[in-house]
Length: 110
Length: 132
Image (cartoon, rainbow over all chains, first blue to last red):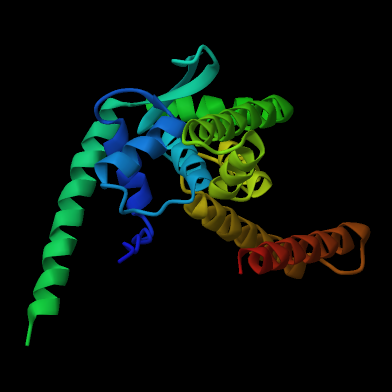
């Protein structure tokens, strides 16, 4: 049976981008690949929608971008987490865990 | 510090809008190119790989526009500033109206004050309408 991929809840994309950038700098394409990898290919993301998310995070000062040379010797824009971005990721993870617990509790209620 | 950089980037984005648009486009094209290469590596023909890459990317122009708009938007909440501006204009209109009422209406100065009060009131009205 084919696996149905879950759509993203609004607001979770930013958290996933922060999470993907946690281990180190990546370009936009790499961020998409990392999200697919860490979610076990379960989350369906329109690849282009990553970019407005990345720009928003850059504007908020949670990620920093700079042009560099990629593995295939092409110019690419790499993003890395700032200190504020690392703090924000912790906050987002805590909020998400609390929300998931509350939702499960509500679903299990009889 | 990052907020300061975001503000500097905002000013830069307004001054060099074309440069920013080119930069965004180069970044998005890089993504489509990478996806195309990955599709070819998975066994697709170059044409099919490029088509699939474009489809999985989504609406290129809409995404580019969206990124450019984010670059040109202020990195902080404008609502309190707009609200303050509206209140200031409304107070100014009230002040002008008060002066106009207390001046004699049969000379040029009185008429000018009345016109100024009407102009500022209209300003407040239009700013209020734009807020809605």
